[in-house]
Length: 304
Image (cartoon, rainbow, N blue to C red):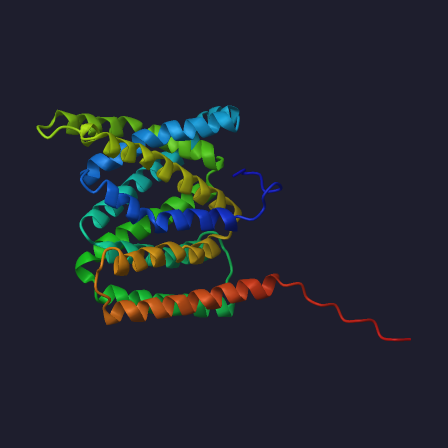
């Protein structure tokens, strides 16, 4: 998971790893469903920082971390990105624990379209005609799904805009993936400890003291937070933001399937139409990328 482009130039493996982990995250959230969402996010932050520091020490990136801490401009950006990711975590956990699995899935279906928009408007990335067709199909699918979920649309929009803006900021800040995530976790540590202390002082007490297994599950949240975010930050720095956005359709599709199977939520016609349009769009986008990467055969020289 090195940040050096010459060692691992492609961000695709990191992106796939991050989105697969995020896709199956609702299964983990079932284990901690008894923990109030706000308290769980607090513990999630508390246990993310030591995981990041261990990886920093293992990879000998303490000099990079100190350099990032000395960069005031980078710290200001990371303060904003840390706030955005904390909002994203809370809304996502609340949505899953309250049975709004499809609303969470829709948020991350909207997010890739936002990534494409940010990539083209702000980062001046260019899309081919076939890729724009894919964007139009995906937008149509999301519009169909959103029309049937107006009461929970705030969940979807909050998830999409918080994470889309977070990724844009992490792509532009001049700090490595791991030092940046470590600083974000450190920024959020004091509020997170305050949340944990507040719940511990309530009559019901802290969820961390309920049982050994629940405590271990909460601690595991640090790993399940740090690893995919680190992979995402690596991918965001190495890939076009619009391309990264389309790969992101993998995560909400996994969540969508989990909603049908594990959470046993009924599939509505609008959801089926959205699913079909988005996967058609994804197939077009991937086909266009693959065809452009194929080496063109050189014409044979004419015989003398």
